[in-house]
Image 1 (spheres, rainbow, N blue to C red):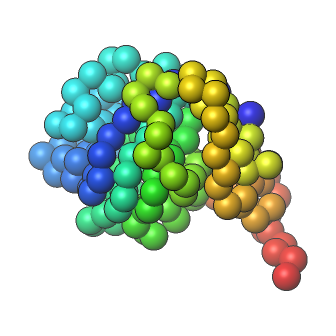
Image 2 (cartoon, rainbow, N blue to C red):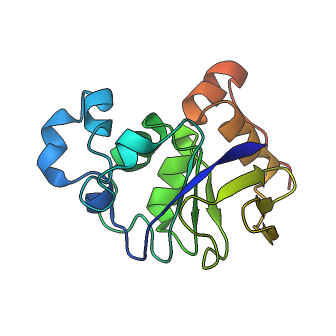
Length: 166
């Protein structure tokens, strides 16, 4: 179960919004780079986020260049999951690889500051603030295991490989 508070963003949040190119020189210092996460779009996010909070956005999240640092800085500041209506495929894959869940669902009725409870195994989201439930497509078992280990590298280090049943 994931529990946290919502930081609401809009549509078309690019990897340049997540971590602007002007901070490219910080890419080898992830903690410092993370201090600039979404600073042009949500200037107080880094200051206000608590471990496990959520980013909720609209369509086309993570578009643009395939910066692996984009999901990494989101996870580094403490975001527990990203909920979106649609996501760029490369951002989604990079997020799973570093252990950040990206859930595709209807985000229209979720507002900033709402409290959510997410059950990854059941594929459900409860908006505790407003008292409604949403569903998202459950992840395949191996993806849940990768997320549970903190990403693809920790998963492979622990298990050596993975077997996908068809």
